Image 1 (cartoon, rainbow, N blue to C red):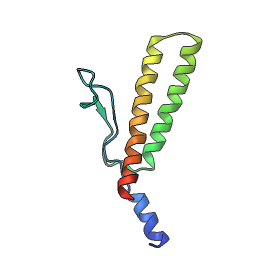
Image 2: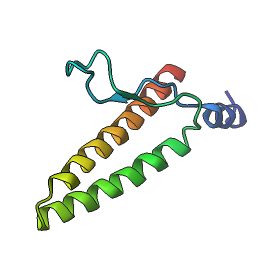
Image 3: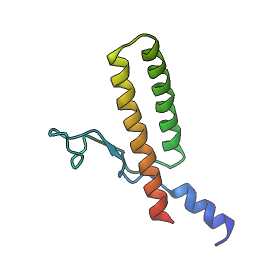
Image 4: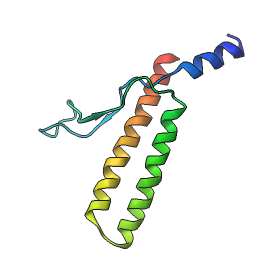
Length: 97
């Protein structure tokens, strides 16, 4: 496969909606509360995940200096969302290979 075909394939990769986080009503992981949305370019998704992790870093840093359960919970949710995005990217790239 020539470089042009490889580049076109990479730019067309999109999120597949497989990344998820948050337990269901009974706490099970079988019915996740949140899921990544399909159809976003895989160049955009890591950027969003990185922004979330930047917020997680700031929230946990602030919570360590001034203990605050709200900041810790917010950081927990944001890190779960970022992880779901990264998992979605990884699976999309695996399926495309």
